[in-house]
Amino acid sequence: MLCFFVASARSDIVVVVSAASPISSLSKNQVEKIFLGKSRRFPNGSRAVPLNQSEGNLERDAFYQMVSGKSPAQIKAHWAKLIFTGRGQPPKEAASNDDVKQLLTNNGVNISYIDRTAVDDSVKIVALK
Image 1 (tube, one colour):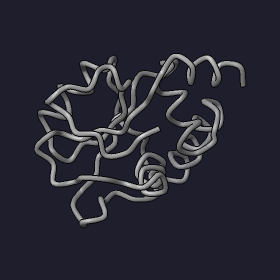
Image 2: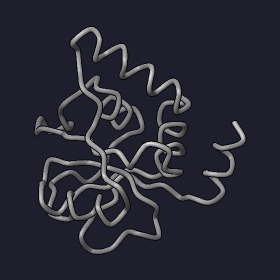
Image 3: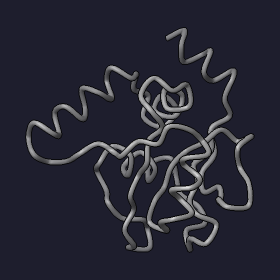
Image 4: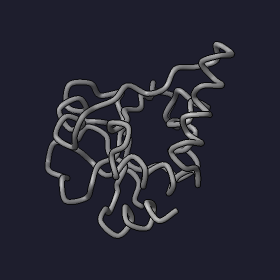
């Protein structure tokens, strides 16, 4: 629990897509469904491919706590269950905010989260912390 508060204090997480994406905003519930494998589509019907930050990353831990209320261990268990039952695969991972932005720029269906301080003109904020 302490890790979440430290991560929250140090990170202002925003959900982002490519600047060229037609997606302009998403609700917390829509973001949660995409990142927990419950939905593979944006509200407009286009494909949504979530990208995670690396496991153990403060942004990742804060993001999942914010969106789902789940700890890193609970997220890992969630995906283990989906993998075991054949109902899903966890999002691919990017090592840093810069890697996330590069992957978003290269593929308009990707969605991810980064620290607000890393936002530039290559990405568009679609949901806030």
